[in-house]
Length: 578
Image (tube, rainbow, N blue to C red; front, side):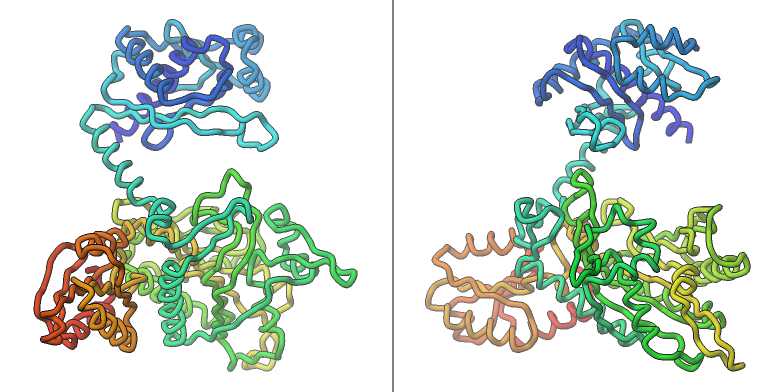
């Protein structure tokens, strides 16, 4: 904890040093804000031209000179009038000063040649900053105060550490992240594409990516049927009254696509599946004997995300939720929550995610539903998490206004945390839509409603999978499980025969009959990260065998087809990595 506090001071101070360096190079620059952030710092500037790589090198050299000059960070408290006079030529600082509440303290920090409006904290002097333990990383656009109607500024990102060794470790980590970037690998492995000209934030699944999606969805459906769910399909558009009743038009309209007018009525593309599942529930009168109803849908929804927030598969405008809604009696609540959590963990483990942490969000100040329902639901969530023996934190007051929830976050292969599964209680929609069931005593009562997503969305989950495995998927998910590579043209017919056999036995296989040399074919299969390569020549053709080259470089020669196929099936059934 002491190192974390020290690092925050170092990074905040580095932001000020960077601002001083930028002003030395661009004396007329307008400066905005420069905080410490996780692993580093940034500062926003309004500059006369766009920055380039050479500029970052020049700024870095100026920063090192400032650090070595051993400047002291001095804090002062000044009046509003003094602040406005001091920053009279800095319009963004003047706006920040105007935003400070009357009576609040206004403080500045000076480091010799640079003074900034700032609360701190900072190091005592630049002597505490290591000139070899920081690096400027990139320049990005950033709207002032995050509003699209405000000017676009240039944000310089940097990282800073206690010593050069920690910096090298972090830069190695960044290199690993870059190598795993799902956008880069999506292109290299021919999995998906995004087409700004045809519509931003909408995903095009290529045949190889579609193979993986189909494997995910087939497994998802099979396991849902095994666990007592039924599949449903619902429309993509609905009349406005659905979204008025659900509350989406009141709370969520800015994130919905614009209305369509048809037959003198307003329609909206769905941002959620919930109201449609409720319509199915209302289609017939329900008895307590009919509950629980567990209905699942791979439902594609559309939400208007701002262009600046879109990011590959991680933040899109059209995506498929692995959605489910459970309608149950109050007495069934505990058992349903226990089962949903167990099922969620099973699914995440099946995809290779074993480092899982839970977050339980409780009742906020503004909420709907009786206190006793909130208490019972929250306790049910806690009991389920404790029974499964997974670590958890409680986010007091962090629940939605309509119910408490569990979020499950996983850590990937390089330690990054991703939020995937959600189990969300809802006391709001059953009330809004007047849902009922007939209880044992013959009276009508409200069912409990549980929203549940195991993977989140197929698109985002696919992005996480790509980065977790760096594109080298386990055999059960690989788009091509086997590449059949003939050594020479004389073995082409045998390669085609093996491909047909593999396909008939349910494996995803493809033979490479190109005119490339064998080594080039192997390199191509390795670049596509195909788990198994069957190398076949005249000898294998004559003996009815195969030589198996694995993705990791290992090779087994002279195997019968049956031996290889049996081992491949076992590996696929186990869902293990190669």
